[in-house]
Amino acid sequence: MVRAVAAAGLLVVAWVCVTAWGAVVHGHPAYAVLLALTAMVSVAVGWRSFRPAAPRRGWRRVAGVVLLVAAAGWIAVVGWLRPFGAVEPALDAMRSDGAVTVAETSTQIVLAPTDGTSGTGVFFQPGARVDPRAYAAVLHPLAEAGHTVVVAKQPLGIAFLAVGALDDARSGHPQVDRWVVGGHSLGGTVAAMEADEADDDASAPAVGLLLYASYPAGDVRGSLTAAVESVSGTRDGLATPPKIEASRADLPPDAGFTVVDGASHAQFGDYGPQPGDGVPTLSDDAARERIAAASVRFVAGLAG
Image 1 (cartoon, helix red, strand yellow):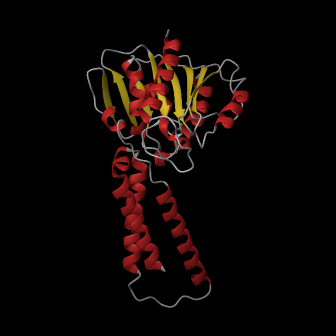
Image 2 (cartoon, one colour; image 1 turned 180 degrees about the vertical axis):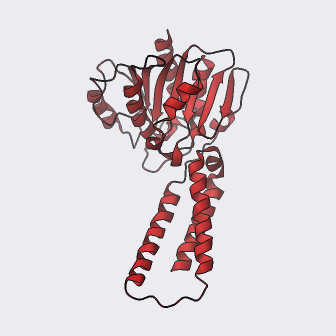
Image 3 (tube, rainbow, N blue to C red; image 1 turned 180 degrees about the horizontal axis):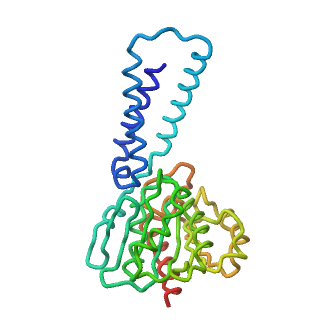
């Protein structure tokens, strides 16, 4: 059993590296560290299992079983955290061109207009376990329109573990005097929390909240002063149309709602299909174009 669990650990790490290597390398380093730790422990435990050991009795046998169950659970979590890797055209949008300069660090991706910024930046939280590069194409038009765009790289791909990323973006881009905070799916839920906390900051306030197939975790009508734009799809199987409609009660009464007919949950980024999602009736290119247009229109309205 020990050898089987150790082998499973190595197989899961190998599977993740083979199928999502780009997402691991270009994501937050926390997951890469988790994979390396899992591989090293699996090798050490597997090697040790070949050494003769005295029979275990009583509580030692129970402890051994508990450790095996815990190890199996750990391996299952490591496999579940495998990110949805970015695909084209997002990968192509990660290259700098004449209009947008793309820079990448271990904790963020920055798309900056080459001819300066309007002073209004966009900070974006990816969806759960989604490669942050997957949003480069849909957010690229915002940078082309003159807005600095910062995409957070979340530890383990979970937005709740990157709640301080907005502060890092603000301190790293002093030329931006106000921010639109946005996010996809779970990232949008966390973005709503961040916008609610940062909308009255005198140095670089959050003046807008941009939700991609998302909604806040609770009622923010009485506390959120930032403008809100919710962009959703009619074929979304996760942030379903009824859930988006119900979110109206939790958002300010003047919140805008753009519904992209035929768009699914995964079409708000470029990372392939997602379990539980609906089947889109709109092409990826058409969905991306409409989502980007709604985003540019919303941010431009705030900048003006």
